[in-house]
Image (cartoon, rainbow, N blue to C red):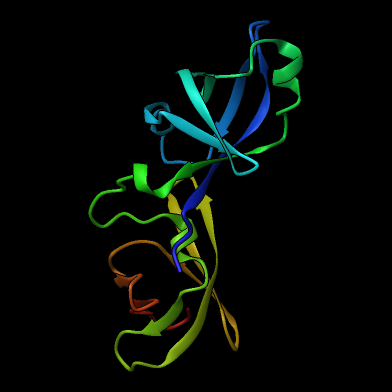
Length: 162
């Protein structure tokens, strides 16, 4: 089941004295978060008045957060976005949609386990498959043959030693 709200970052601090917050985004690029009209904190919708990228973070002004004291109350809170406002594009997926999917061997059809984590490394991502044993698979087309979130599985072509 796909979640209606997707976790997209965390409030790491306040910014200035006018109630802006500094969000550490959980996205490929920080600019991704600047295109939303509404963000959600603790499930409550908050209208975005302005958003800009600053040093890898997103500085955001939210309706109802007008001073540093009210902004400080949001520190360490998870920021979510509405799935309906997002369009990841073809061959791109949200991590939340991949976690828990069954991992299948593309050649044999054998179930390898489930996607337990996706690690970010400088050169890309690594899928962590937990089953009878833990398997680490680079998220590249040579190994990831098909991602089917509708059927709840990812097909992998593994090499000897994985």
